[in-house]
Length: 296
Image (cartoon, rainbow, N blue to C red; front, side, top):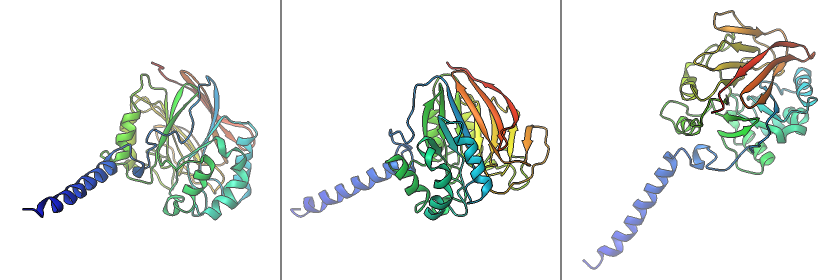
């Protein structure tokens, strides 16, 4: 009898510690699942009008990627949403040789999301590069506000099924009144590209965003696409960032496509409206229009 308390107390403490660890792993707000855990990875601001560019699939050390980066940088953007993939494998060497020389001067304004080329070696490339830029641990998904809109960076390269911690976190963020939300990640749910095409695995993101966002931005396909609104959401693919080009095929839900030129998507955000333009590296506007949202 006298020896039991000494054995029971350590056992109870051990079980409590295990329970706490499991709770942290399962929580959609734990650092281990890549959420911000209340810390802003990209800072919000209260400006009522901002210029935001979105592009991915560019930095490969070649001239086309440099030309796209110059197009964006010379407009002095308030934000740049980088939609993933630094070639060839997203190593630190790739970031230092291909990304930093063309985007380094505006890196403090970039909100990133990882691509499929970045992710396999992210612990040695994507993670330390963006941690150095932000001075904070990398968040694999996060949100911030600018121009009267909520912008949500999601991660298509980690678990994103309907029961995942990431989708639970997304549902917790998509609760504000109105639907002035922009979500961005790498792999498009819908794509007319002849290289990848639709990705049904992205449907849980889409389902969680319906009624809470009006714009979705993706890369992955190396071209420019705009789809007709689906469930109140307009999807843009902006993957003509400089690394080769893929073809597109025509389909009824596709409103615009260009696979012949490199370029990027420019957004002017104000409360209640986003003016968009796909712009080629020559400065020509290829497609333009307005997406409106409810602010409350």
